[in-house]
Image 1: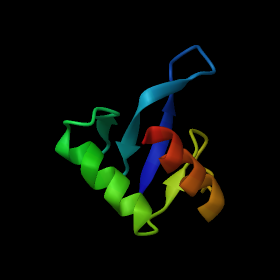
Image 2: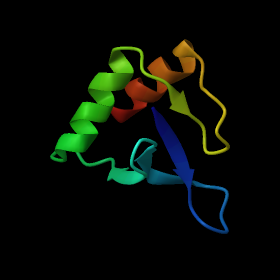
Image 3: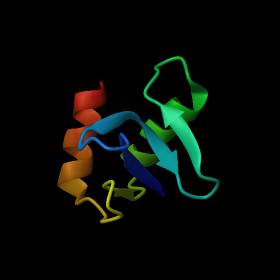
Length: 69
């Protein structure tokens, strides 16, 4: 499971995602193997939460993945 991150004191999305199992911060960097695994997991249907902890719909996750590509 993954969660989007907001920048502190701003209402903007951080260019990273948090892996909830170990609180690792994964930057949106194509060369990063954790980032590649994150995209693969989402494509397989794993859950993605918004920055407030609310799960995104399957359609919202698909749209998010499309923006990353």
